[in-house]
Length: 112
Image (cartoon, rainbow, N blue to C red; front, side):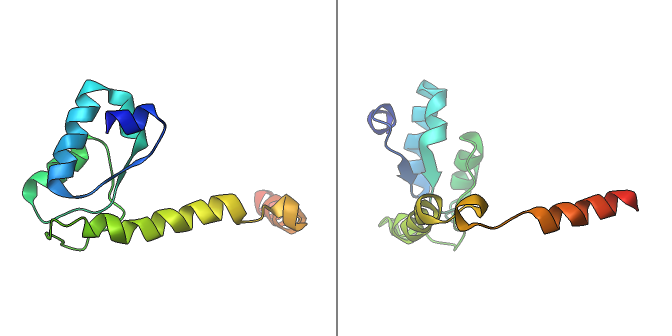
């Protein structure tokens, strides 16, 4: 995990065992927490404590306890979708959308 973080590669954290490794990494290098993506919250009680300790909210909470990385496999679809939105979604400016109507509404609300 620390090697991936040092190489600026995000790490998908899946399940309790992986979470324990993430906790160790964060204790050794607190800045590593910013590169972690908690895929899911497993049903193991310790996993909730680990996620809290590393300051992560999981993408999914499906009561998984399979141990085969299924939470990460499922969460990667969300990660891919988020990246597509960031990379491909038009901004108001690039789409030629004006915020003038919203501005007028806001100004009218202030007058009330």
